[in-house]
Image 1 (cartoon, rainbow, N blue to C red):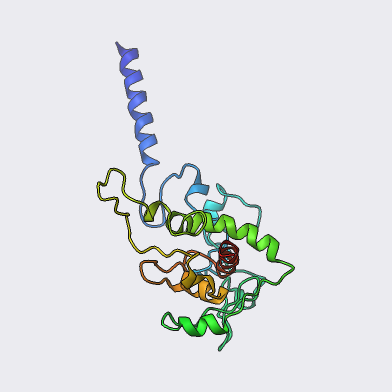
Image 2 (cartoon, helix red, strand yellow; image 1 turned 180 degrees about the vertical axis):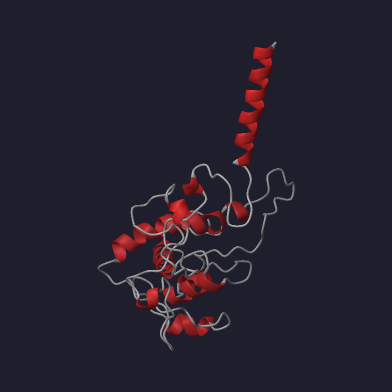
Length: 222
């Protein structure tokens, strides 16, 4: 009986010691299992910690070999140690192709159709059309149809509808006489801002991909 009692005491003591590791408060956040899942190793762009010893205790568990504490995130390669830099005044962001932000407003379709010229020249046209087909099938085919005739699933009659009404009426037939002659700039603008039933896709499709889709639509209209 005494042996069993001693075993019980040992178990209680062991549990008590184990539970102390679960305590947390203040600077002590308790024992962390797999600390890499809790703490970011890369630079955090929206914070600025200049103390190289910050989080040094945790660094023992999360050693990246960089010689400083885990929470230190100042970038020594940038002036003032900042990871993010404020852009110079009166500048605008460009993408990898040098495109400027699109500033023609939604209600200026006629202007866009007249002045916007595709940056895709003849040397890039074949590859752009190939990519444009993939992008068209991803973003446009469900409404405008595989061939651009306005007969995609969204514009097709509902299954079992006795009247044969489409899910959404009025989807544009891109091969119609009214649209065959529109410019690539016109198509780019409509993709960007939307028109009629069509919603804006400027936030979903990059400028480069919009031009590729426009280029492919023109091949469908031939």
